[in-house]
Image (cartoon, rainbow, N blue to C red; front, top):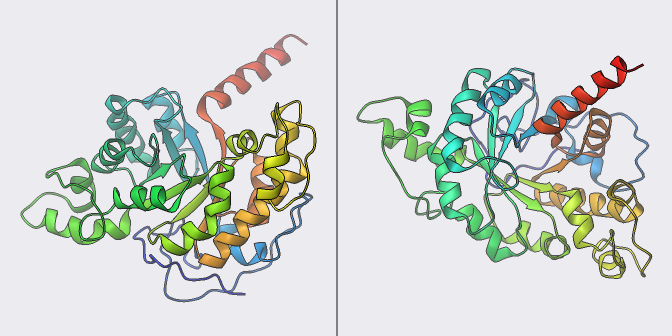
Length: 329
């Protein structure tokens, strides 16, 4: 079955493979490409349309989160082969003073840069990220149509949105160069170039997901945050009663004792199925975060287009801990 055409199609990102179609990176073309079958998975999610979402292995874009604030680490990771880096100003040690340095450091690696801003009302953060040349923003804490619409609006110049223009800017220099017509060319292209990823992190957002996707144009990816979703659902340290209904289940059950167990439970399976089905139906790419390449491959097989599979600080910590374990044998 062909992948549905995105309602804000033709983002100007060149895909790494000529025949891949994706709503995350690469241009979503006006041609329709049938999805090849993809591999089996042991994950017990049964979304009837999940297979329609995944345009094949080449359509999946894997990324890492950069929370250290280190330009050196960001630059190294930009050459690692990952498709995208999320520079995290929400939870990471990344202020807007450091953001320009991180974006400059990743330029040589030709990796796509997505900046996670503070939330749907963070107009200043969105402006800073885009003026400094980020390819797009990831917006957390989106719970309603109104918040989604505001987040998208801050990324678009009038008449489509409320983004403010500054010239010259690093974004203009990178994308259009210098000269009298550079700013005009940038304005003509910016609204279709900038990627807008909204996070699905709460029961409220899950319940409003169809409404958001139906009413708000210009969303490129809905990116599930499983940990925050599990907390919002009461899966850890509370009753699951409120969550099971939102995820399509019924009844209450005792909470899980740890996060890993909650993320592996049937309640989260239903969340994955619901997010994938809604995104596929509305022609918007679906994304998700996890830890580790094994789980990342599972999520790709389920139908996710953008999979974040670790954080830079976690990679360093695990590598050092594993080395020390070997040294102490």
